[in-house]
Length: 321
Image (cartoon, rainbow, N blue to C red; front, side, top):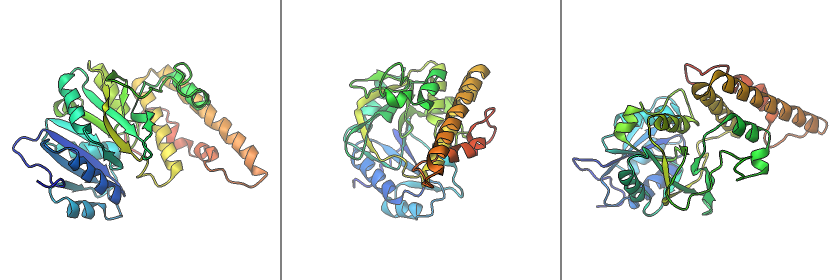
C-alpha cells in the first residue's frame, strides 16, 4: 500500500484530526509525513478546512484521495474545527495534529503505546522540535496561577527563563515519561470515549487556551496528562497567523478566559488587573520612547492597550469572538 494512502479497515484504531487554515503546502507535508511514519497503524485522517483562500482543501483532496476533507464555510477556529472533525471520527483513539508539523519516525506508535500502557494519563503528548532541530519547550507546561501571570507580565519569566520560582509555567523538555499539567494541542492523543466524556474542546476558545481547558477538566476527572520524549514532531508554529498582533491579542484573551472559567472571582479579578497594569505601563513606556523619534516598534503594546476591550474581559464570554 502506498505511503500516501489511508488504511481502510473495518476497525479504525486511530483518527487523526487536522484543522487547516491557509497552510496548503504545510498541510500536504504534514499528512505526507504522518502517513509515511504511521505504516501498520489502522488510521483515518480527517481534515477540516477553515474556509482557506489558498486552495488548501482542493490540494489535499487531490494529493490524498482517501483523506476526508470537511470544508467549513467560515473560519471556525481551532477548538470548534476539531470538534467538527471529532464528530466524524471512528477510531478508538483521537490524535490532534497541527498542519504545520512533520511527524518523525516512531512518534505515532510511541504515543499509542504510552496511551495503552498508562490509561490513567487520559491525555498524552510528546516532544516538539523547531525546524532547526532544537527542542521546543512549548510541548507541555505547568498550570497558570496568579503568581505565574505576574511573573510573565512583568518580565520575570523572561529574565529568569527556566527558573522554577520566577518562570513557574515552564517545564524542561522531559527525558522520560513524565506527568504534566498541560499538553500542547499541536500533538495531543486522547481516547475517543474520554473526548466524548469531556465533551471535547470548549468552542468558546476560538484559538489558544482550548488544550489548557481540556487538560484542566481531564485532571479534575481524575486523569494526569503524560508526555514522552519518544514521540517527536517538528512544529513550525504560528503558520496560520498572518498578523503577529492579532495572535498576541488571542493569546492574552485566552489566558483571561481561562482565569474566569477556572479560578475564583478574586483570583481572576486580581490577575486581570495585573495584566491591565502591565500592558498599560508598557504602552506608556513605548509611547514615551518612540513618540519623539517617530519610529514604530516591531511589536506595539500601545496597540494591545487600545484593543483591551477584546481581551480584558470582565467575565467568561458566552460566545466566541
